[in-house]
Length: 341
Image 1 (cartoon, rainbow, N blue to C red):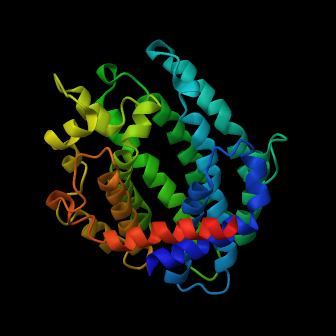
Image 2 (image 1 turned 90 degrees about the vertical axis):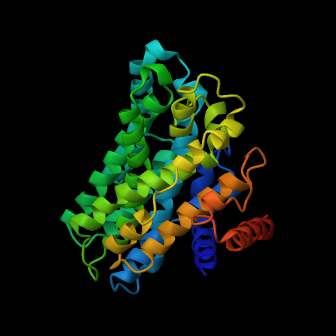
């Protein structure tokens, strides 16, 4: 089952890189549960590698992809916080400068494969950079991955600026673009790690472009699952909050999402995910994992105690039809954390 594979990958990466992670996140801003869930998504890279016919380097692929996933989570904890972007609408340029300056050292550490400063997060980033170089079949493939990582860092800067802005002064088009690209570039960079070794081919242009389609829908589901947290963090223009801002009298936020069917509008139209699966048909279990991620995030929104939707709401049934599997996965994650304690 997908959950078993995710748990196995995440547990191994976190266990073997625990000291590096502790040094990169000395305040423990990323919980043990979040560490495990983030590291588990390295399975995207492993699935890509195996789907393309690769064998023998799954461990190294998972290590590099897992470190990349965890590094982005550690940095996100800082750049998404109100202390980073809560300076008011007239200070958007200053927010962008602060976020860019904060992210620059980790990006430089990955690219140079050596720490840009003495911090633990730069040590983690440098270790990641070394791992990517050791995996890469040639400079061209390495540069391809590094370019996507750089683009991912850049969209994070723009996302903080846009999503923390006043909805009345923010264009919906800008919200839509960053919503698709935040997850799209992230999913692409993680998966591309699996296409680095010499015993597999690079991804095609269309396979790479399809990640933005996945990102658009996965990030919408993520914005619903993190709706309350994002509002508490001052991300006033996440797509659901942006839609609420257009209402004259929205009322209680979660109730308004359901009453005005804003949450339903965040779900893909019929056939949209099937079309994306077809574009990734040659990547083994990658499309199954991406569909699983979308469903898991949708289910998290439905099971949120604050949600005004029932778990079996028919409007979400096509996307949240594996509730038992996700419940079991969450229980196994909790059990794994207790065993490691």
